[in-house]
Image (cartoon, rainbow, N blue to C red):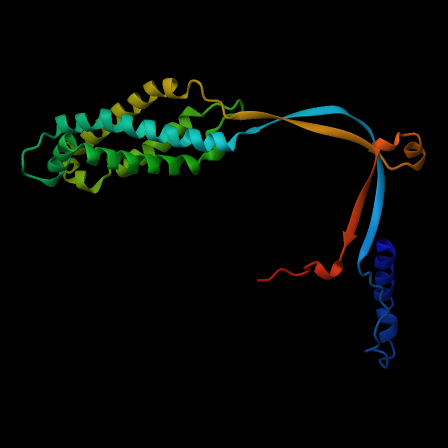
Length: 245
C-alpha cells in the first residue's frame, strides 16, 4: 500500500511537464494518493533463542562514583603534600599577603576542608571533560590522562592562585614554581597505583539473539506458543515532517 502511494505520487510528478505544455492547465491539480491511518498485524515465529552475544561497555554509574572519589582523594593528598612545601619555602614574615594565606592554612582546618572540596570539584570537572579518553579499552583508568587533568587543575588553582603570585614574582620565583610542580608530579605518579589498582570500569552485558521467521510454511510447522503477533498502528497525522526552528 505504501509502495503504491509512492509510485502514484512519482507518476503524477512525471506528468507535470506534460500538463504545463500548453499553459492552460498550468494550475491543474495533479492527481495524488494519500494513506491515512494504517493498522496491520505481523505474525512471526521464534525458531530459536539460544544464541547470546557478549557485549562490553563502560559502566557509567560506577565511573561517576569512582571519579568523585578519586577527585576527593587526590585533592586531599595534594593539599597534604604541597602546602607544607610552600610554607617551608615561603615562611610567614608579615610582609605580604601570600605568606599570610599559607600561614592561615597551617592553623585553620576549616579553610583546608573548603579548599580541598573546591579543588576536588575542579579535578572532577576536568575528568568529566576527558571521560572519552580517560578509560582504556580494558576498563582501567588511563593514568597519563588523569595526571594531565590533575596537573592542569593545580597549575590554575594552586600554583596559579592569585594570592600566591606575589610569592612567585620574587627573584627566582618561577624556578621555585617549577620545582614545586615537578615535586607534585612525582608525588602524583607515585600514589596513583595505590588509588587506581582495583578500579575497572567495564561491564559485560549479555544480549539475547532471537531467530525468527515470517515464512508461512515454516510458521505452520511451529508450535503455537512460538508464534507471536506484532501490531503496527501508523498515524501520518501525528508525524512531524518539519522540525520547529
